[in-house]
Length: 71
Image (cartoon, rainbow, N blue to C red; front, side, top):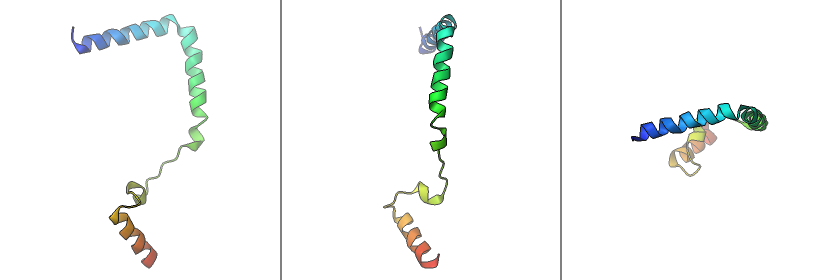
């Protein structure tokens, strides 16, 4: 039996168990979604160029010096 066939069997069994225990799975998934959504306001994305480099990176240090000098 190949690894793909074993994986297909695992997911088939997972699907069967979810359908079998659907009245337990649905509230658990809703509780998980609610608990994770409470953290949504804390998510932030920083796409600035400075965020891609470490503080001790020479390029970032040069950039900071340049910015301090010229604004």
